[in-house]
Length: 398
Image (cartoon, rainbow, N blue to C red; front, side):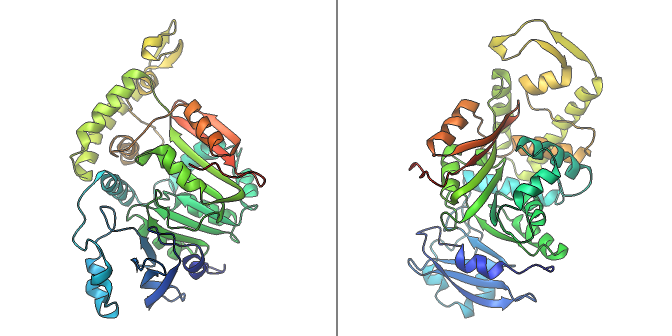
């Protein structure tokens, strides 16, 4: 994995903990890869004896339930090496669906369908142009200068690992951990192996019960993820417990929209909930074609006065953007392909959880957790925050 030190075993044995009781874990490896890291094996809690599979080099640290991967293929291959498995696993049957499982399936499908989105080509340039300034880094040099001050970084809801790799490359001496709910984490670790990113490591788990040791990271990023949980503030609080004193947490959450858009977006989202991810994707294709047609109009309109009842401010608008901001999400960007534009609309409408918040709410969460805001960007689309846990102040219990 490149010239850098391999951090894999250090992560497993020193950072990972049991999500059930926070106990330390014992590693039993069944197969090693050519880098001397565990490819397949099992982690067992020293305290409660719950066990967790490692497959394809990724620890799957879920409690039994709807989002835990089906362990039967693992047991079919390794059951003779792990005789106590059937007796210790609660719920060996295929997990039933649930709200979080729907979110898991949605993002797994999205990221494996476009498995290099934001990592190469025009989408990568577009993401960098939007992301870095929102977090207070004027350019790539400023971003990399900041990352050189960090030693242990966590990318929560890492998806394909886009931001994990950005951080790992900015500081090759730092340890970077990507935590992801869906199976697209396999794409991330495959990319790391192929491209020699030796300081990026990936774990599949639930951020609501993060399988990581408290106060272990000096930088935590969660880009557009917290609002896809059942409780945004609770999710943020769970991540703050992982932050070391003097560390920073950076996150982006959706902002509450104008009333017509709030209604329309929730209505469309409700139509997708009983569909499979491919069916939901196909539904988004027609909406995306409408989005392109609106964008192609290139027509502007003057709104002469504020319309508070509709959340519309006076000003001159491109008609597509006026509809986008105040009526329903209809994303289109000429720099992206049709499939990439569909993906953006799918990302918004398909997940069951997609909470929106006000800047005042978010500021209250940050202050209530004992954090100091380092940078904040408030846009129509969302709220971006970087906040520090001071060395001399303690967390406020959630």
